[in-house]
Image (cartoon, rainbow, N blue to C red):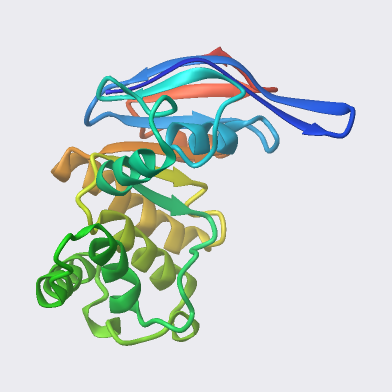
Length: 224
């Protein structure tokens, strides 16, 4: 289970403060499909980053399977993140000098204690095949379409078999048809793998497929 308790996030710039999150409480059960819906500037991406251990809250706690991820060391939090969480962003963040296979296999090599390259490559090929990219294994990001790059990013997020998949506007840079295919893939992963899926979006059409929808505005939950 993923749980947030009284999350606040304040950014300071000299004497001014920007209070982005104002006391967020939520619980997300294992295997749930969960959407965070709100307009730009509402704080939804900040919330996602806090849930995933990418940033620290000004106040509050985040628990993953009972572990307060902000009470442990940065090293332990990074290990937990690598083991339990996959991230899919609006911008794909692929390494331009690596091909699709190399981009996907990298997190597994980082996690693996013995760095077994053959096993890691085989697993990456299996996942890339599952997302329809078996013919693009050795293409670099510049040689791939936007939808193909996002599928590489999803494969990379899945390589460590994460329990939780955090998606920040995953279709934001895609045309509607490609975006629909990406969303269908994400819902399918949630259904078949029972991966906990959390999607940040400003589009109600995307959020409506989720089991639970969290509405957020001005840093506060205003309805579910």
